[in-house]
Length: 577
Image (cartoon, rainbow, N blue to C red):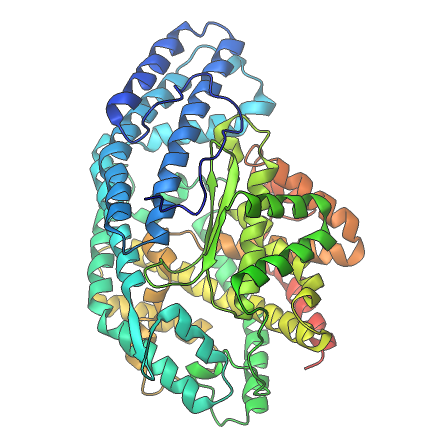
């Protein structure tokens, strides 16, 4: 049974090192290729020979990465399928642990190689920096800990994907319940919100159990690598060479000073328009004029067709990329029972094509999500010509510039989904969402800083730390009577469980995307050309250079944030309410 929406894909370049019939789930077949690479390293007597060795290593890594991606896609598309779960866990538990020491051995050979210094610095500087950093951090004793971490993450996804509620006689996923938060009937919104909140609260201890186990694994990983805490370890492991934890703290402060006034202003206006004495959690998604929710499309096929028209208008090259994904069936976009929550873009690294996964239910946020994930997909397509596997992946901080910029640039043509009045309403929703995102980002990021610099904390202390951050960044929402739900709100953020410290990147990237958008206000053609040029660089240049190529500053101080938030507020003021 094929659990993947796409069929057999052709490799972007014919294999020259990895055998065509190799079973990439069988370690006994994979291991000899690492043996060959180890032997050949010593035989690479010239810079050209070392470069070819790197390309063969890249070919093997791309094939293995695609195998892992295929199993992850099958598992997330069908969390209730035992075969998909078994195949995913087999790779995680029996192949990846074998891979890590062999990859590390090759990295060590590269770092110690006599021809390494002769490689062209302009070409290999970023790769060299990253491999050297990884060699310095690797500890064999962390392999079983990371395997257990991955297993716990899979259990989180399984638990999240299994959550269902019965609402007014019908069984629904929690994602499907989200549509009720846009309904004008306040009683209905509250009923739907409390139904979901109560269901999540029932599982709070299970989520806490999983998270406590994750913290334990992660703290030990950091100690094994010689770090006092997991935060400092992760900054090194994630290659954050261009900013520090202290820079993040200043970012949080800047959000508090520059963004929170705009958030409170928007909340006050929402409360006034709704005619409420207090703003409650179920009042944040509804249209403030109590208009019916925006209905951008009736089904996923319509969403895809309208999105295609946006790209047809925006850029012929981008439009061709999105059409290619449809032709190759590289989209799984509808929400259904047993499907993991959220959305992602995953690159099939040997075919060098992107796959988009999401849970569309007919809301405006689905339009934002497809534009966002398409931006990631365009990034993957832009790097198809890069043969050095690591360079086909940019740092996360810039990957998200690719996706968030596409939300803003695509929204210029949102009339493909709506009449003019509703299009402006969608733009307002999007811009208000961007402003509202920064405080949530700061909350999630600051929370993780606290968690991992207080490794012995209790669950009560963890809840108190979260509540303090909600007080700082939550604005004027009244949670009276639902304090326990507020204290566990962090459990909804999958990044905290699956991708520790992967969240501030969204804030940094949003500033880059706002700059791309601001540039487009002055010269749309140049802004788009710069954007596309930057995407082709992949991960071959340091972050500041990637941002510069896109016409942006790599900076997240108050000086950068203030004019961008002001631009968003000015745009909002010009849109009909």
